[in-house]
Amino acid sequence: MLQKREEAILVDFYADWCGPCQTMNPVLDEVIAELDGKIKLFKLNIDKNPQAAQQFGVRSIPHYILFKRGKILWRKGGYMTKRDLLQAMKGFVG
Image 1 (cartoon, helix red, strand yellow):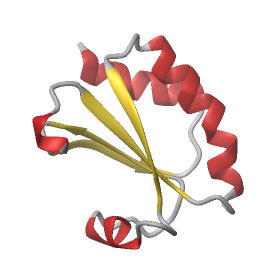
Image 2 (image 1 turned 180 degrees about the vertical axis):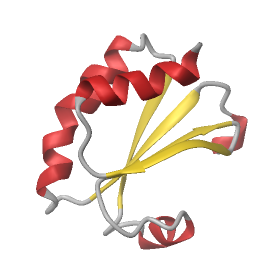
Image 3 (image 1 turned 45 degrees about the vertical axis):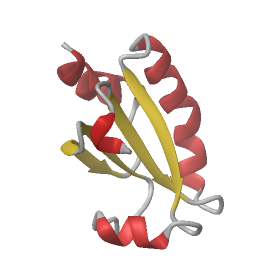
Image 4 (image 1 turned 90 degrees about the horizontal axis):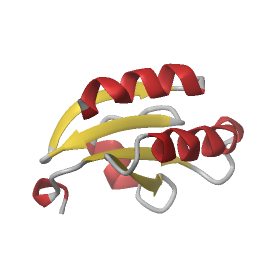
């Protein structure tokens, strides 16, 4: 699925019980909105998809991985400010 997409996809590895993950939700929504659809957001619950978290080496959450055409362009774990996340994403949308 990920290989066929032309736009970049930001995968948010999270869990419902994770406080920092909840804190990041509005930040992610604002950043995605400001990028005008150039990056799609895909939320992946690690409790429901433990094999995906293991496959990508996610050991702590929140954790973000940016994919384009199936390749990992960027990854970062932990809380981020809106400014930092927006700055990081702008580097990949041109």
